Amino acid sequence: MGNGLTLSFMSRQEMERRTAGGCWDGGFIEVSTNGGTTWTQITSGLLTDPYEGALASPNPAAPAPDW
Image 1 (cartoon, helix red, strand yellow):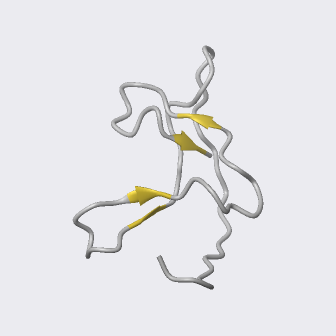
Image 2 (cartoon, one colour):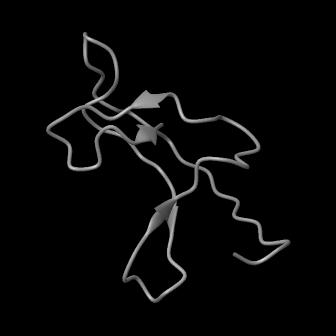
């Protein structure tokens, strides 16, 4: 990863929460350094609004942390 890179964005989220905790829906940030062959979720270095919970199965990204 490059040093000094910054990603800034705004989003509005209306996700379907589960009564048992976590979310059915969610959003997270991933980065690829090889043209999209593999992806790595950004989990550290978030300056504001850290991830709020984990995605729930059967979401294919479960149990990734998400907003």
